[in-house]
Length: 191
Image (cartoon, rainbow, N blue to C red; front, side, top):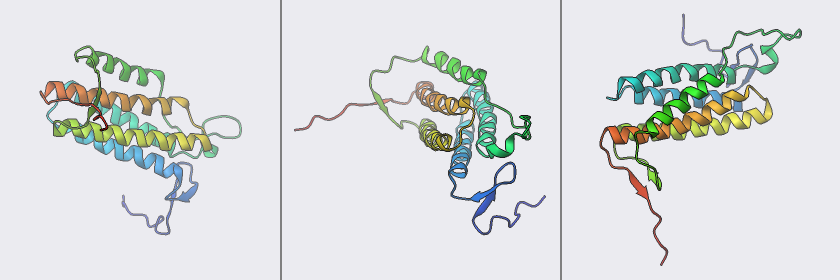
C-alpha cells in the first residue's frame, strides 16, 4: 500500500464517505487536532510512569481514533435514505466517559486538595500532560465549532471535555508520584 495518493496535491482531502473538502475545513482542523492530541498522549505513555496509566492512555488513544473517525465522517454520507448506517463507525458512549471519571476520582483520592491554580511544569513528564491537556482543549473548541455547523453524537464532545480534565488530574498525580513540585499560581498584588 502506498502512503502517497497525490489526490490531495491541490489542497483538498476526502472525508469518510468520499466527500472532498479543503484541507483547512473545520472538520479537518477538528480531527487533525485530535490526531495531534493522540501523538502527545503517545509521548506521555512513552515516559517512565506506572503501567496502569500506560494502559489507560493506550485505551484513550484507541478512543481518540474513534473520535477522529466520527469527526472525519460526512454526516450526509453516514446514513442511507432508509435510515440505516452506511459506514460502520464506532461510537463513544457513557462508559468511555465514566472510565475517565472513575480514574480521576481514584487519582484525586490520593492527592492533597487543590487550593490554587497550578503553573504547568515541575517535571518533563508532567509538562507533556499539560501540553496534551491544552491540545485537548483546542480539539474540543474546534469540535464544538464543527458541531454548531454539522452536529454529531453528543458523547464525542463530552469525551473531549472529560479527557482534558483527566489529563490535568494525571499531571497532578504524576507530579506527586515523581515528587515534583507543584507551583501554585498566586497573583502578584498591583502596587
